[in-house]
Length: 138
Image (cartoon, rainbow, N blue to C red):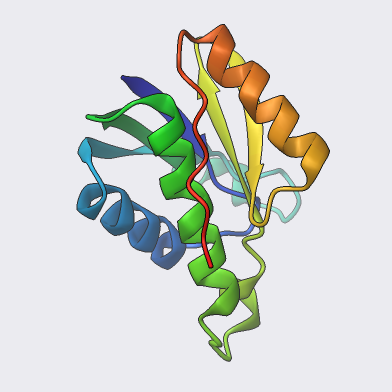
């Protein structure tokens, strides 16, 4: 199964690297960064003449060996880990959700999922031919 994961605005390369590592340890066959190029805006004199551009990681393209429900569980567990890690780096702790996209269909994954979010995840999984089974955590 292939899907794209979009990182929240402001997430840096360390966050992408951490998620990539977690996915690879949890059943992903391949995880490749999705890069976005930004050209400098015109503001200061001479800025538009510079060939520089900013490249940032906007997300990850994932090939996952398991089923969709397992992939969603892996993403949710990573979010829970980030929330509970107790890091002092406020920027890293701001990752509270991830967007998962399959063929233009998008769902936002959070941890913990609220009841109405669980229902939306179930609909998303069924739309993509998956079977719904929740992994409960203590």
